[in-house]
Image (cartoon, rainbow, N blue to C red; front, side, top):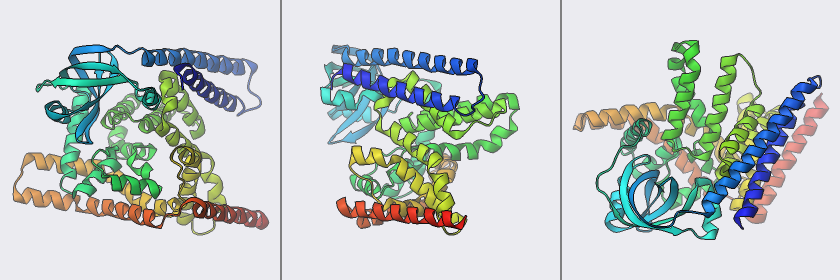
Length: 457
């Protein structure tokens, strides 16, 4: 696919989203004034036009990278991870991002670095393959960098990144108290760091429909604001909005600004703005505004599968879940939990079916069993992990080790439960036509429940 075609598709997606949300915003009340309608239409057209220009500029940058030898300062954009005997990361060289596969001494030196830090490197900037250019476009990667040398010294980068890296270091030290697999899953649940997860774990979570748990989303942001709520409520009302935005920005940096957390943080920011202004804005409008603003600032997000999965799952929760909750029989705790799971799964199903060729019906059961426990880990994981990490740094004696282990033991049990659910879900997962039949049965049950609800009216 050429850059021009990709640009047109990205712009089309953006304009479509902008117009749909604009029309929905205008049609809320039939009695709106003509001037307000005209203002909204003009705003949508301006946003779409500016997004189109920014998208074209972004694709031109991807298609015209600075190539050749390089020696100088580079910023580490993504946390390095070991892959196939080497270290993979992304470096920013003269304002452009290059993916790096380093081996030997340069690889070992890069493996000790974190996102936001600065190192001196030398090597050659090479053109990226056309097939990889589209796949990596949303990360703004323009080429590959063949490393020759990496300095042993480094700079910490900005204060915000330094703070985030210290937080991640403390959480990693608390995760090291658990077994290797449990620690890797713990880091994935609380901050979306899945670098240490084995391939078998990643496959199990994907085949059981639980892969969304290791991608930071609105649930993580909601739990973060719940934990920080008592502190935020103590602040003056004039300061509360700014502090909330800072907490969201800090958490975005800690989780490395993944597309899903960008969407969740942007929605939370709009909610905080509405609260500060004393307005109750519908969640669907918040979602639409978040998509428009994010794609407006970064049109290449239109090529991120994670961004659209997060957005479509949220749309399913907002649109489908309330309808299912009305017709699913049983106690409220069961109907709410099942309708929430089904709403999110139905929302994300078109994307998972097309991209990953997978939409496991077993996800309805695994999510019911795993999500509440995973939510508990997300809620208490950061404060407990921070406390355990600080205690580990204070002292390394046997007594302190016992205290930290006891502190993290309940978290380890909860993490192990989520891991077992994923393994059993993969084992019992159905495939191809059998899985399709399972979804047909679910659809028939929903239709029959709806008919029963109509008859009872």
